[in-house]
Amino acid sequence: MKVAGITVEVERKEIKHTHLAVYPPDARVHVSAPKGLDERDIRSYVASKLGWIREQRRAILAQPRQGRREYVSGESIYAMGRRYRLAVAEIGASEGLERAGGLAARGKAQDNRGEGVGVCGTRLTLHVRGGATRERRERIVEAWQRGLLAECIAGKLRGWCETLGRELPVVEIRKMKTKWASCIRTKGKIAFNAALARVPPRCVEYVVVHELTHFEVANHSKAFVKLMDERLPRWRALRDELNGFVGMPIEEKP
Ligand SMILES: [Zn+2]
Image 1 (cartoon, rainbow, N blue to C red):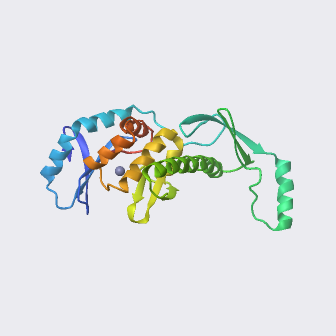
Image 2: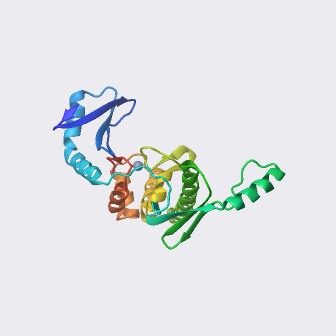
């Protein structure tokens, strides 16, 4: 449907509440609506959110497009909100051969020794065997990023669970398409988007507090907002900062 000149995708789902999101990179507007909801109601709902939609569209369209990363020297890599300059250092050919010989003797198929990431200031050195594919280089860098994220999440959770007097949840980090995190209350589990590895720890903390608060209040009602205000008074600024990162949808949530 079109509302005030903006094309809006409408998806019917088995849900209770209408949900609105604006997705990068082209700022498409998507509405998930309950199956039985009248089209006029969807239209008036979208119309009531026009100010918010325009603002999100402006923000997304103003972001620089991020091309596919190749993991070659000179590229920028983000980790915990810091920018690193990548330098690829190939592990020498003779070294590789020597190693291959040693391995063959032990009957191992693959050798990862010597591969990994080294940090010196803002320089990120990726040590890989010569001729490693883009996917392999990506895997090594992502494993390093994910390790930093896991450490950050664990630290924030430890502090907040102590403050709130609750047990540590089970943590999962995986690639997610439309959310920064989600929680399964009944299992005491929180899944975090691996993409959080790029953002500053203060934004990770916002996600941690948001998800922990969902253990008490499932939705984004006034009660939820009240708890967030008490726990992390600057959460709105952190949320906006988080949603400013490229490649993630901006959902209409508190
Ligand atoms: Zn939420």
